[in-house]
Length: 156
Image (tube, helix red, strand yellow):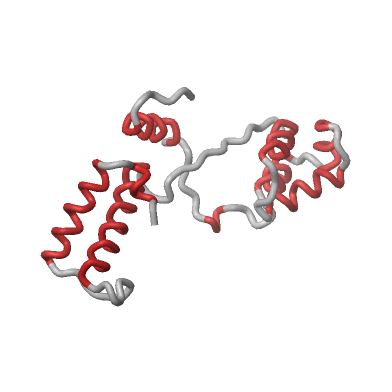
């Protein structure tokens, strides 16, 4: 995928490309991992995968354990997927919403922190409800942050 120029257009292109990727809950991942689940569903043995890839059965066994612990390399995952007649669909997608939503949430969190720090510099982490005036300030800061440098959103 070649991304267009401009961050807004890039976010839109990424949103369109990743729309097909489901937002899975962590508990949706099979306990023994995807390799094992798909291998079992296809009825193919570790030895058969090993022969197709040109590695030992112990290597395939290690790949399954590594993938279940989320420690497998993308290269190894590609090899085992290909041996099963599959492909790896790998993407980084927002947990909720779009990339623009991620930016807005980050800007809002930063704006709230700024307002709290300005209004209570001795304890900016104190849990307090924001007043209507403070919320209006938060909204103005969010708008300014979203118009400004994108990197500024992520500075501590």
